[in-house]
Image (cartoon, rainbow, N blue to C red; front, side, top):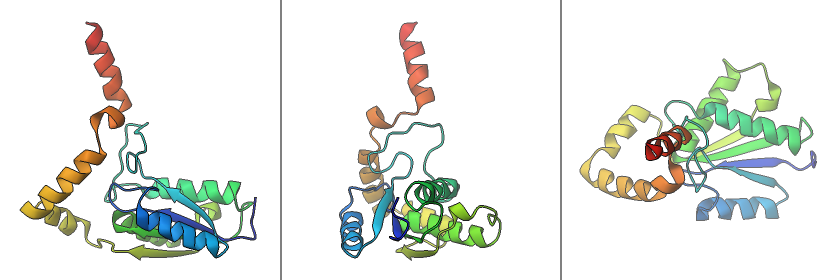
Length: 171
């Protein structure tokens, strides 16, 4: 435990994770300046396997995942207190904004889940409009191809689908 050193939680953009250059660069800079650094890889992103039936969704629900990461870091690295800041890029910035808003309104009961300061970078503030924009031909071609490469079926098949495949294969 190092409760005297502040903690910085980083959350990458759409489909990315701890291996992204911009995440690693900020992590190194913060560590050089005395911060403890952690990175949350959202479900199925950044090479993380999907281990639950729920997938990453910036629009509908990774707020609990962010709060869980914060609570874990406060308990295991900050001794239940300390200072914790977060930086989120792109969709993770949207999640961070939502968590900050919720901790002031609907989730005020658990101080271990609180983020003391946050920065959202290149964040889509209107998720329905952003989603519609990604359906435009150029964006669809660029993002669909790159996201498809990062979500290869061998590594990211849901556990329930894997079970079904094993069952079907035995028939």
